[in-house]
Length: 145
Image 1 (tube, helix red, strand yellow):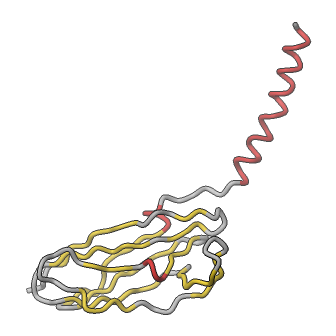
Image 2 (cartoon, one colour; image 1 turned 135 degrees about the vertical axis):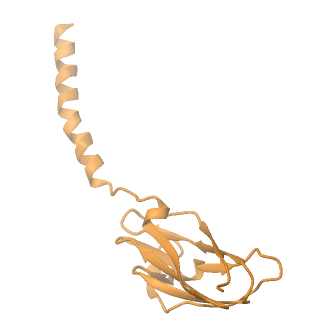
Image 3 (spheres, rainbow, N blue to C red; image 1 turned 180 degrees about the vertical axis):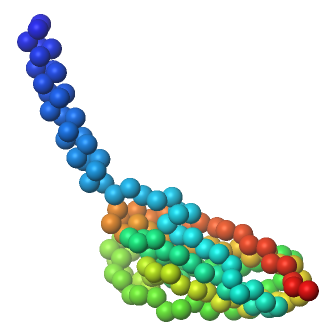
């Protein structure tokens, strides 16, 4: 019985460093609110910019960056996105346009009244090959003056 416990102890002793090596090789995933941050900037009557920060090693899908408003009687007239970088996505089996650096989206909205904007995004951790579900953030715009 002593031999069994000695063998078991030795096996566990040798296995612990191996588990640590596997844990260190897997990239740590940031929560989506840290991988992709956004803030409102340059708000004026009928116009607002949303600034996006994309953490290194992550990317956002250009076609999954959307801005809408739930405010009755308010409209989003235009969402102007900069060109992205074309990359081949093996999971989708096609090339797609993405952002992997900071960028700005300009939004034209109906002016003068308080408005809520909903910004929806979706992106992935490149090295881990993990994509996040869509993320939504709400901004409130109040007219100046």
